[in-house]
Length: 120
Image (cartoon, rainbow, N blue to C red; front, side, top):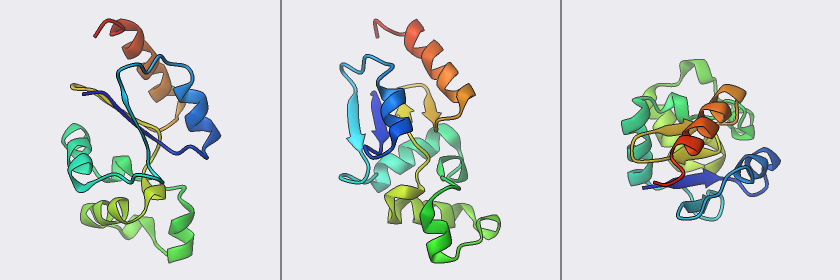
């Protein structure tokens, strides 16, 4: 399994995706085709945290008047399923790893993983 979840209107997502040969990957634009409950469960299995998948920069937080510090894991799960913008992106999922978000350390780990696994 190789999947990428991204937002096509996000320049950072597009820039990160452009760095890799994603032949054979399922590439999903999350606004057009939101993450399913099953896919979110797969992500959770690799992170053991819905909060790790949650974008604290989502414009929906302010619009909904949410106080992130008070949210529970179930709240994060429900919000992730409710609106695409709550997912930290991009998300790259392989059989054994998950790479979440666009921070420099994550992107460097993703590059290293991709370089070491080009044939798989």
